[in-house]
Image 1: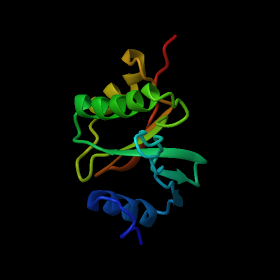
Image 2 (image 1 turned 120 degrees about the vertical axis):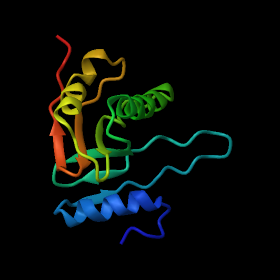
Image 3 (image 1 turned 90 degrees about the vertical axis):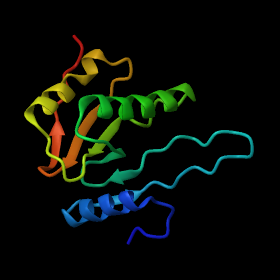
Image 4 (image 1 turned 180 degrees about the horizontal axis):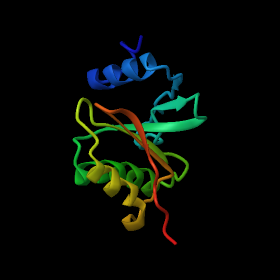
Length: 137
């Protein structure tokens, strides 16, 4: 279903599992860069069920790894002047477990980040779990 459109094998496996779990998506085409200019950053897909544009990142189930993957994606987009992408993430930890400790660390991520995000989910052994992000007061 997702083969042959320029996705990495791990991306295809995630999308197949995500759709098989009952989610409805529409892939967002990657921007074609003009010669000599960087491509406009895009998210990976439109999650029809949630009405959100989603960026998926694969990471191990460690806070530092996840924080870095998100921060790097947001920072790169914003450094090019794009603030409307890389706002909602699904972190694919594959068959690993989302521990309570990691869940707590992720929920506080925006409190310490110069690149806060709007929504976060983790996809792993426990299924798809939304992380309720605390906001700076």
